[in-house]
Image (cartoon, rainbow, N blue to C red; front, side, top):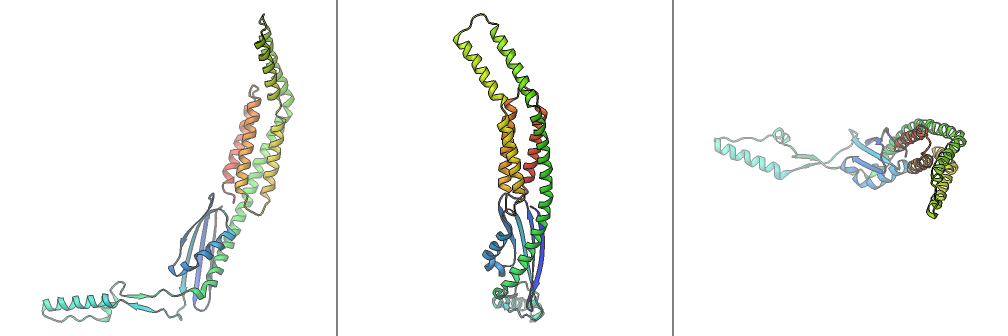
Length: 289
């Protein structure tokens, strides 16, 4: 599920800012953008993220700023400075005059003066507080999106139930029409003058197939059971996305079976309508953790 969260925490020495963006995904994958000084905390950062997010693409951005009162050691690359001074001396020898190298000249040389990486171990709690604060904002955003998804899924389930009720009201008519189809087949077969043993077996097979085709009560019952289970899972406060995806597959399988059993009767429209609603459900279920 999508979400965004931002939080900044500070003490007298440091200010830490955390930004988190989440996108839909089948599994949890975290992309990091953080200073090297925070690398020692990666395991703890991962554990905290997993406490809040189970599935999805997570972009994590961490920045910090030291207070003006905090002293950062500076490293001087003496060997590099000596190279520049010696090069200046050689150029001066060629021109016949001494070239003075000032401190300002040295300061303009890239990477000659470098701030050392500060040890942030003592500030880990500030980092974790900012991380949790950002995750709580993400969680709230995802909760709101989840409420919208829940309402959308409920609408799809209601449509499926309405179509099922319509089918159930037509069952007797469907059975009657199937019986008439079989009657026509049997009468056609009986018009043959001679009856062989194979012919009798064929009639028995036709009757058996009809009996199987006419009984769609199990499929309709299982469809209602799957819908009820779907609604139960929508109320859970834990990851249910994978289970809902599986239920969508089961509902699709049942309606396929139902349609195949009574395919000799023209009920294409309600079957297709249910399949369309299931496809919409399955698409949105991918967004549910």
